[in-house]
Length: 100
Image (cartoon, rainbow, N blue to C red; front, top):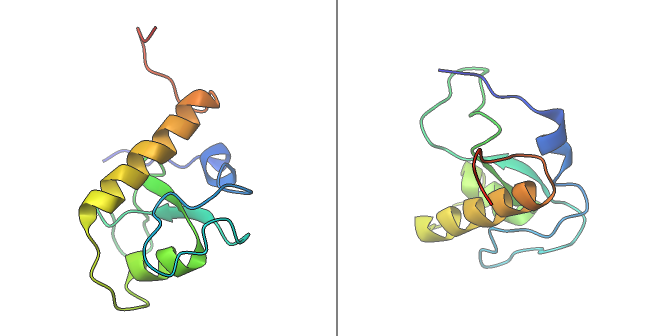
């Protein structure tokens, strides 16, 4: 498994609104960070690659990580991933070969 660690992707969350938007979301309360998704590509002391992360406020991040119990509809997580990756694409942080 490749480790993808990017300071630019991690820093991209600063000043952004939350893409997860679960109940109780802080949306753009200044607590948004890059939250790594629980997709099974991690281990003790190893985070999921930065490519599989979303912009999440502290309230949503706590629910995603299980620090606050919540039933999460993973369609919301997939939507948040798509929105976050489109932000990165539009900002030139990621690219797609051959895309017009």
